[in-house]
Length: 280
Image 1 (tube, one colour):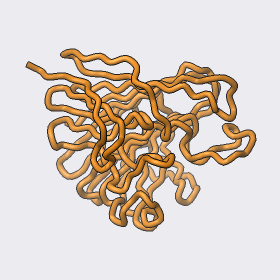
Image 2: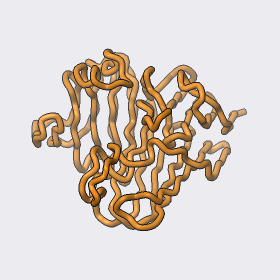
Image 3: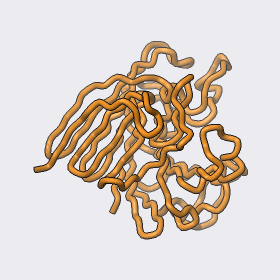
Image 4: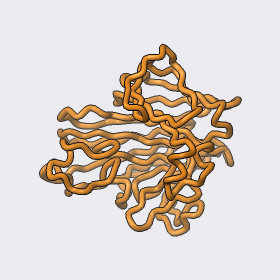
């Protein structure tokens, strides 16, 4: 008989006092931190980890956790003037990665297990009133994350997934648009290739990316399906930038790639953004 459960868990990996939830669906499991509503682990089968968590990740003192699937909202990257009209000091990637979320609805059945985490944000510097954000995490034969906010306002978002890789030089992401914004050099590149590989610092925005991407490495294949997005961000900091990050080891860049499902337009609209992961 298929075993399913949702349980509270204190600590994950070296983050021994972190409040978490563990989802179990047969042999598949996922661990979610209530701090940042951040999925830290997804194992389709026991000891078969899809995500990467930095061994130097921290969560105290308003530190965002490095690894897993950080939730970036309501802006992506450094805050722009639109989201910061008073030009105050604000963190990269929004306001919710370093806040505790609340547990909302939970469901467990033969079709899957799911939990919804919620947070009310009333300190947005550009929006009057409170905005409610929720993340629904569903585990069955895949893992699906759906981020939503019903408030009609400018809002960017990204599911900033860190994927574990055994050999960075053999990892590739496909199929991608032929052109992209290279943020390292701040230029638009049109190289005609539908594949991203990793042999230097990589920070690319692929606009209007496909609904399904594949992360290939050695003999492993991961399907990444996305909805509600208008871009995919592909990132790896490489050696020099890693050496300047206090929560990365010198060789950490060799252990992960980020493939991020993103909504980057700033029109007034509600948000629904989804990423589904399945190893094939």
